[in-house]
Length: 498
Ligand code: GLY
Ligand code: MN
Image 1 (tube, rainbow, N blue to C red):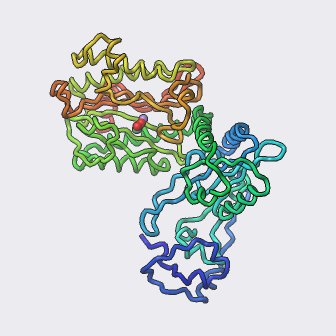
Image 2: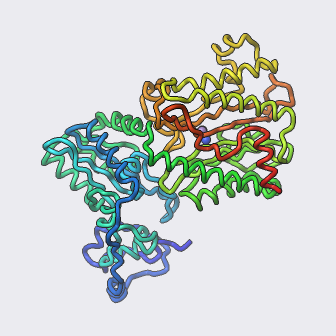
Image 3: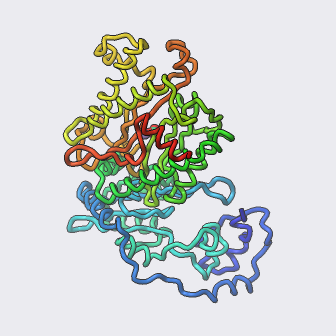
């Protein structure tokens, strides 16, 4: 990797004119160029073609984002609302972590720019004027485009403010002026200001004297609840995420022999390649858990061996280019065939998932799918002699949790655990509505050191997870592209491995 600020010296800004003071300066020790000559600074200013893009049409999601902003405006009349995308986070020196904008900002704008801010300014006559503050194209006059680590010659072309305005269907402004403009309007037209916190500490600090934190949590909660019911465009994105995820699982099965020869990391890399080619990224750290690692719920170290005869629990999701993620789990026999005990445990989890999926329909309580799945698992645990009955008593005490461990699902969308800030009555205590998307993911996990189960159970973990859309008359499994029954898994694997 080339050092982004190799060329920037402390005097580079000085030689490139007054404007340079506005450009971010990240001086770096040990650059190979000690100084920038006036002649070079001058020569770099000109000789560049005009690449402005004209006649851009609004992006597909812009109309949906406008509806979401209208709902936000209606909920907080007369108030100034500030929703940041978040900032780049330095990894080391002039290298940053990959950027992922806040889900709230993406949901309300369809944009993914770093350091951006959405502002809804209350209008005197009611409603709000929305504007997005963005970093414009890099300045050629002050040298920012090639001397700064965030200049376009280092990180790639950005949209001009005019281009972004056409794509987003929203007025755009220079983000370097956001604090001054917010401060000026706060003085001229005082209004309660709510800021979505925890995404942009620098912005929060700069606005400190113009804002209180009063009511900010309410804004966060509202924006989380605004995502509970997905619109048709979002459902299309989640379907695309599931389809790409199915391709990723297929890749993994095709490459299982290489994983056996190496480690769980091969599986992680295989799925990641598909996620980056068909989407933006993985939606969360891929869980590649072979053998007893399957009993660790969020096993993301992925550094263990992959052994024939054992199971592989793969929990993975592709995040689309628009940042919607799938969340799918399949538990696969590494050598292609379940043994009798693996199949018995697998079938119990499958039956629990079937019961859970059947309980997902409009008008049902959110908790119903969880309770239906837990009932089946508890019945089986009693049947196998691992748990004492009667069933109702065991369920009342939730004794099955020693082996089922987690809740049976969660909302899904722009985040893997979506809508996390919604009020309890709107989420776990809600009644399901068409457009909600949730995972149904029961599991059974027998830890390697669990002395309360027969030895042959120890080290076996099974989870099956699908992404379920609530429809007008029931549900649709968005991840149905992958087989789920034990027989279906075996024949799918055998077809892929030849
Ligand atoms: N896929 C990980 C989880 O749902 O926690
Ligand atoms: Mn999940």
